Length: 290
Image (spheres, helix red, strand yellow):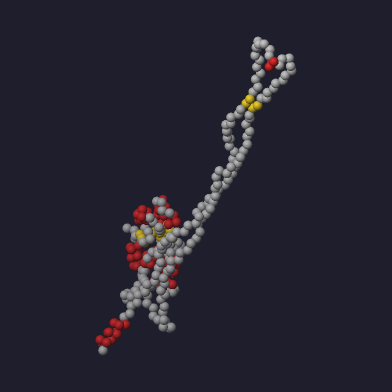
């Protein structure tokens, strides 16, 4: 059964002996809908030349895994596997539904059992993880050997200046801000023509000439035997087209800014210090001897 490491930040990691198996696992994770930038494939020592200085190889891979949020013990073991030519696949930011899917894929693609592999390495002389291993590397010391005295980490005697210092370090969460382009709104105006029609009522006046036969006596009103002229004008209304421009709508652009409070969560590391003082016990033993 292969071993897969999981952390509280919904991250899974698995170790493979072959690049082919590791790449297959990555391809299947992407096909399952897991974002590519959430998947990391870390290749190990890739050279036909045998490793002559195992400690330096281990130290380099241990430093390369510094941004992986995993226990120091797992990081130490993965660094050893990478120095021996293995491949690490890590998947982060998994949702609850993606977690089980990623777990099945990593387990199905031939990831190795690190517990069994550690036993094999120990049989070859590998000492395994010990507290303080990272400090020893930072000082340029040799890789820590197995400690059979029951003490934790490495023990250094006081130097010629009668003082040794262990720095107590706390990581601080620093939250900054950056401007992100969320898109653009553009309003462009242009002119187009369209055909329109309107109805109008037009009035016409026409002159009609009518001749009627009559037979009656002549009267003074007839003004007979005088020259006369009568006339009338015809009139008709015609449509006159004019245009009037009116503003019917206004479109404006303005920026509206809002502020909101957002909580950013992450993991920080702190140095814990344990002080063991057995001077009181030694004093009692000396008193009893007296």
